[in-house]
Image (cartoon, rainbow, N blue to C red):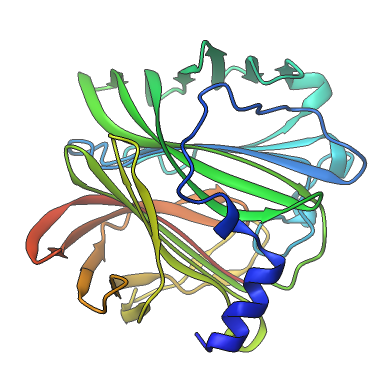
Length: 332
């Protein structure tokens, strides 16, 4: 990214003032929205055993006007009353729901209790988060314990705040075939934004567990003509350390899937099969160099796009890493 352009972005998006500061588990996550605001909650769990592979919870309250995060053509009522819900996994390709906030949801103003139809309940007490998913082909109960390691993707005062905190989790997943005890690292996200028609065109987001105490997030957002809005790797550790890396960032689709996917509103979306990305540390030494191959379990409902899992291999600070990662992908 051009240094002058990066400086200009930094003057608008002031994440440099907060990244690296420890997370307070009691940080507010209000559901209340002002006129035109949207609110987002997210839980992303990578690296689960076959065939589950991943779990995610994506909630958007209100209908986003940015084309990669909202699809007004799918509305079944007022835009402000819409709650868009994805509770995805590798065993359930049909986990997207459009709900009415007034008719289908219970939302405490401070986010302490949230129910979305019969599919999802989130309770937050004493900083911990209890998540319950109940779908015909999969149910899950998880308890998340936030660490102090938080990554801020956006901080534009009065306009847009978006953060993700590294969590330890434990719980159970039940499918038609089995019940599995699971534990490890995941992420808990919150965003609140003015509902502006931002011209973003492409969005990619990877979540990888590198070892028992380290997680990496990779994010790329592009505007018209491929102009980068965000290109960064976020490293987080259970001891509370968190860092952001942008030096010599690369993110390349090496091979596209043979066939595009068609969204419920009729948009054909080209999907990746193999993706490679890398970044250097502040001294110019290789930090992360990873290749991912999609598992073909993409499920619709992430804004206007898809979420799924990948097999990844690569190196982190020179040592080999591998596993099952989580991937979000949108092109509009």
